[in-house]
Amino acid sequence: MKIRSVKGTADILPGHQAAWRAVVDAAATALGRAGAGRIDTPIIEYAELFERSVGESSDIVVQKELYTFEDRGGRELALRPEFTAGVLRSFIEHGMFTLPTPVKLWTHGPLFRAENVQRGRYRQFHQINFEIVGLDTPLADAEAVQLMWATLSGSGLRGHGIKLGSVGDPEDRAAYNQYLRDELTPRAADLTPVSQERLRLNPMRLLDAKDRGDIEIIAELQRPLDRLGTAARDHFEQVRGYLEAWGVPYEVDPGIVRGLDYYRRTAFEAHYQGIGAQSALGGGGRYDGLLAQLGGHDLPGVGWALGIERIIDALEQEAANDAASQIAESPTPSSLFLVPLDDEAVADAAALAHTLRAHGKVEYAYQRRNAGKGLKDADRSGASHAALRGPDERRANTWQLKDLGSGDQREVGVQDLVDLLKAGSHGVMA
Ligand code: AMP
Image (spheres, rainbow, N blue to C red):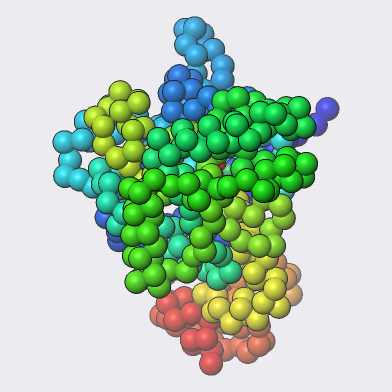
């Protein structure tokens, strides 16, 4: 029997790696320039870390999305379902509170949730994550939003939008939750079981309901933004002011709530229409109090996570919508395929490939090929150019360089091949 991949996990094949790298590079650039340090934390943590941080009413706990297991030492462990808890655990463990504030950290990697698998919702998926620890000013929230925007733009995406809301201070949340309880408890029997559970544990989370019936029941009710206290409202208005001053486009969404319980005040999401029902590319918000809850100093924080699979889905949609013009215009660097036309040239090709790789992508045939077969190999490798060598070229210490696009051919020396790789596809043969 063939062993297949686990449902909801995916191989990232070579054809997808360039897009993948573009997204991670965009994050590294945007976040690195903002002073964020790269951190990597383990995939395995104590289950308690997540149980204590994400909250008992989060999807991760209510819908039993946490992958937990007991190891041979009887430890209760979990595969990380999100980054913030692990990053803050590391912050505390390594005494980062002694660093000058703010401390900005970013990371990316795989996460695991036992989800109902569908487009954009997998059991192993990947996020880019960014945290600013130690600042409670609205400036930090605005900078976090701006950097989320910049990371998406830097990936090459154009059609994304930001939704901004606020879940208020803890007392606002408590009052809002009481309001929802008062309104909805008499109608609880009409709600789905998941929504009933949310009503019991953290009614605000009902606003994330996906069920049509639930959505209708909630539609008429006030949103968290309608019921903010003065301090949270003032904070929210300041965040808006900064974003407007910086020209970061966003729309206010009064009903925005986040999947994890630890958020307060600012909550935001990035969206892209056209990638199916799961249109959220990422989300984030302020989480003052979480660090203390995990046993650290009581430092405030704000952060976000972007889903890499969904960004790539959006980029592919955008490229398809652009009718390939975008792709045709982007210059691809030259690459070479060396074709030895006799046995002696095999060693020449191998040696030259290893030298030329300092300048670009170079492959070669591992055995003697006739010109026709060699050019076919070159084509299949995706190279822009082939260079062939037989006895005549060896005597002259040259190669026959063929542009596989135009068919132009001429005899060149090694330095020409170096120049070709350095110059890009429109260099030497033009
Ligand atoms: P969250 O950590 O739930 O706030 O999610 C932040 C972002 O991560 C989402 O907007 C998605 O882009 C991505 N994401 C979350 N869960 C999944 C999943 N199961 N599969 C793929 N992407 C996900």
